[in-house]
Length: 57
Image (cartoon, rainbow, N blue to C red; front, side, top):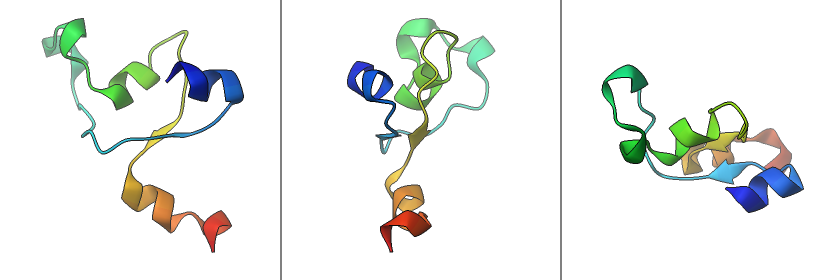
């Protein structure tokens, strides 16, 4: 995640997105949730989204 932020890259993960973080302890946040936090702001996508990007084909 730090490397993706430093390089301005997109992070690819297979972890599911969490809909409601208000009921979740921060230590249980999944990677996509952490990427959206203030100060992190890294785009996180899954493998399917990566394969659907038109820049690859």
